[in-house]
Image 1 (cartoon, one colour):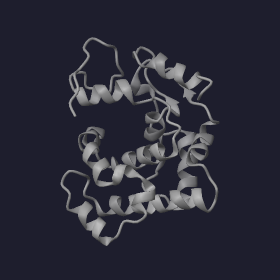
Image 2 (cartoon, rainbow, N blue to C red):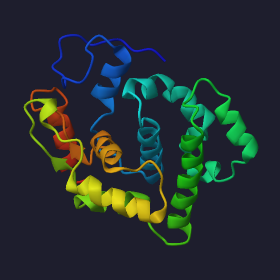
Image 3 (cartoon, rainbow, N blue to C red):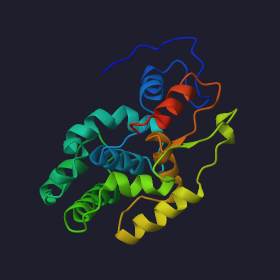
Image 4 (tube, one colour):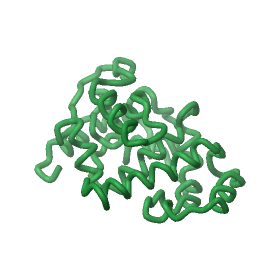
Length: 204
């Protein structure tokens, strides 16, 4: 899928202004609150896939990754066999890391166990770390934002206790930014107020 760059719109400084894939992601996804449990699981896995890589690498491979991993649907991933592992590791269109492939399958099993055996709603569970509503920051420059927070550290500790992989506090802070648990758009960015309004919506 291709996108056009909308020029001359103030954006966060980390966004390459001439990269249509990056600008589209920033303008339409990053920082918008996500409440659906499976969508949050998918995003958690995507951010874990980024470990050691640039986010643009994930963006460029994301379409194929979603296809290869059945949309990161945990109810499908839990049935993956060794043949599926081999299929994934031979796919040049995704991140071919044995650790990350195995972690995705492990994490899917934990997600399903939490839901089916423990009666835990994954969305409620994660959003509880920010008190159920987005944290609204007001950075003048994206460089002012931290790389982790007390909330991402606490989330990391609890997810690791449950056996989740690739859930360090830095990965989780990026995840929390991306799914709108933290509004870290710079105040001069065109997306700052829309994301703030979404976070303050009574439906959120």
